Image (spheres, helix red, strand yellow):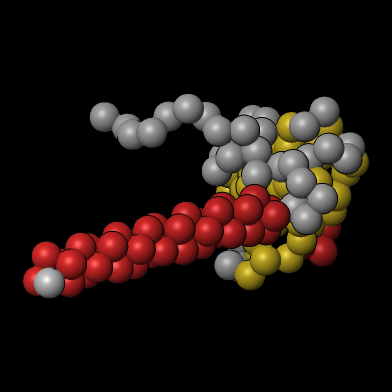
Length: 131
């Protein structure tokens, strides 16, 4: 009789462990799908504009255009999946020379005007660590 109780306890333990694993997998799947949808509800990459730390706009990287930022102090250009800054009223214009961005996590910063443009939902750069 003791052996039957042990088998029943093992079965219940395995069912509990299996249930926890299934729940964890479902939560992970929901989290991953939700993160993908945050960047751009229609899917794909987008340029996220933050001014003085607050999100001001999101532009899909699939739609070409010129976008004035921060009341016109900066101009963001998006073309063929790349984003870059063309005009800035800051004195050093470093943001204009930062180049084109398209990969997840890349950014353009205009410190004097408080503008940061970041790519979200883009392709991964493939770099995991820096040495």
